Image 1 (tube, rainbow, N blue to C red):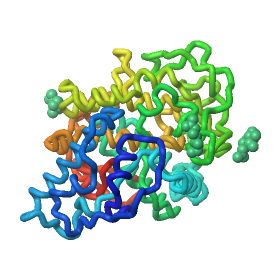
Image 2: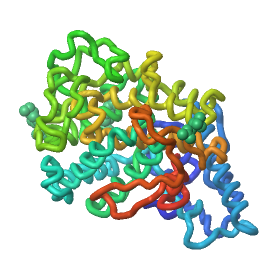
Image 3: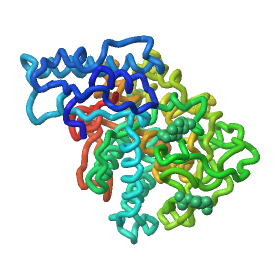
Length: 422
Ligand SMILES: *[C@@H]1O[C@H](CO)[C@@H](O)[C@H](O)[C@H]1NC(C)=O
Ligand SMILES: *[C@@H]1O[C@H](CO)[C@@H](O)[C@H](O)[C@H]1NC(C)=O
Ligand SMILES: *[C@@H]1O[C@H](CO)[C@@H](O)[C@H](O)[C@H]1NC(C)=O
Ligand SMILES: [Cu+2]
């Protein structure tokens, strides 16, 4: 983990513009923030905001977020001194875009994921016979809770906690030590494959599936409310990059997204098969763009958590896929296109990293948004249920014995968390 801000202005600039290059630090100047006045952190660590470098329009919101954190920290600590033991801007861990990782970090990240796939499962085999690895433990927990963690009050907070636990497992059980990566969708919206994310080399997250004809009548999304043209690519197994020929054990439950795949014989049964993808440019270029992300953050229509999270997750009845589903269906395939077992697709994690980052930028645009909640405790309120509250508990089965509340999870610099996004 990054325990200090090691950025020179040059490094910070190269990564903040969302550049896919991973230039090594130009110099090793360490900012001694221990002794620096909190209020000067921004000027010392980040170069002045430069609109010309704001290629995705999101850079400004990163700056705003860091400024607000500095302000909050300053206000919460008399005379600018940091409270020891708590999360503060000195200790904060920085999550980075996939393209900003070095090749060594990229390889170490994908190796750690594959390592989790080789560690024994902790799930009770009587309950989840298909969970064969530690990685599968994560997939199984998502499957079991699917209908109470999507289009619900806890969607964003549940997935934040889930990502954190996965990240912790990568580090503690498989030795990952680099930054937690996210996928800034808009960077690849016009050309998702080949790209620096979906990349056949050992430094990407693997490429498309081999071509097998599929979905002759289009690809159905959101239970068929939206049908998009079938790409003339993918459908078969992923055979390149770090995840070439891996075995997927759980799911799919809803296989409608890729009609050549059959649903699992049972909910948590063992269903070993290859990882399949259908990289979908039609979807990414329409709904997975920087413009759509920016709109979520700045449009006053989405300034309240309810409309924000609804737009985020798609308005399928209005033909709008939304950035969350757009990311999922940009990879598509199996299990990537399955609502239940989608974490079995390794790109799930960088995708949801970006989901969490967008929520963070939106929260930090006005920190009064942090402690807000909307929505019920059932998927699209079906069956009708009560509203969720910040006191609602989240439990993660074999992933952690810790029980947290939604209120514990709404800030990335409080409770169990101490991270920001650059
Ligand atoms: C795929 O990754 C390699 C290694 O990092 C890189 O050289 C190449 O440019 C990438 N391909 C694309 C299309 O970005
Ligand atoms: C994956 O499988 C394909 C097709 O069987 C094969 O050509 C390729 O060499 C395999 N790759 C790896 C890394 O095992
Ligand atoms: C749930 O929240 C909505 C929106 O704030 C509100 O209109 C509704 O009355 C609440 N429902 C209950 C049962 O409290
Ligand atoms: Cu999910």
